[in-house]
Length: 381
Image (tube, rainbow, N blue to C red; front, side):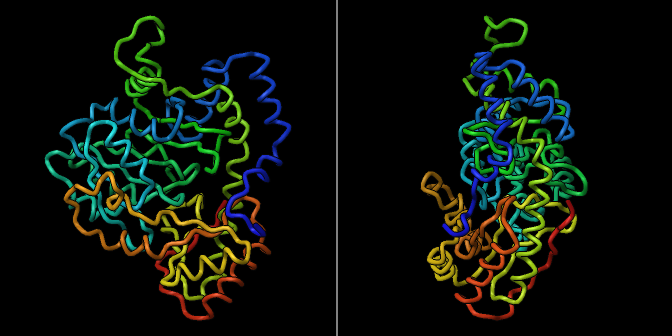
């Protein structure tokens, strides 16, 4: 690849010495499960997210599932989920025993909208799961107000939103719990699978901790008060995350600068930039455009050695495990799934890289007036 979609190695090169030290510490101490590294990361991440408690876990999917289970959400319950998301959001609902209720999204941001939430509430609805897709939270003020009036839990799927904000409130701090993935390709990524839940509810945090560790409680590791599993955060991954967290804000700022350059240079081309609501600060985990000529553009970029992705080409409600459910048409999600394309985005992307990507897009699609952009790009650090 001339311009890779994501290059984790270049991120690691910036902090190689610190990462090597984490490995040596883990091997020398032989504390691979729990211990000071996990406790240290949990304390640091909860502070970063402006919450009181953090439970480190094995993955973001485990985080979502354990929150649902700890809240007592299960068979007979419904959870509202945007259909434009990675399948883990819906799979966690199924794993808890509840049923995901898929809804459409806002056409400008492709995120959960207040209208779709309000229309989907039934007597069986127990929670709403806003997904901060591409690194941007949806309208959490409005979603929170609707949920509060209906007595619903708000569970944030913040797997792509490390450091993003809505109206000054950081992702993960706006619901009963915030669920994060630290998959290697995330803005804050481990060197393997990892995740976490943040919350201000002590009892919820303790229930999640017990569920993640075979039902054990802190005061007696040999007494199992419930049936749990093994969903613990490895100490090695916690140490790596503590190092990378020191770089997160700077890396996110570089992503926002890259997004601003993309938006400016794409403005005259026949593509639509999926922009950012001015009340939000995105971390630009992904740089997403829409075009009716997606396949032609994908082939042109790939032929030029430029990495691209599609997030996601098949909406959740059209995936095989959900094919038997009576789900109405979701026109915004279904149309977007045919048109979205993710361009290269990473902290070390250079202006020259972006110019080359845009030049290939121009060469492939020609000049033209792009579709309207109702939102501007947030460029603050």
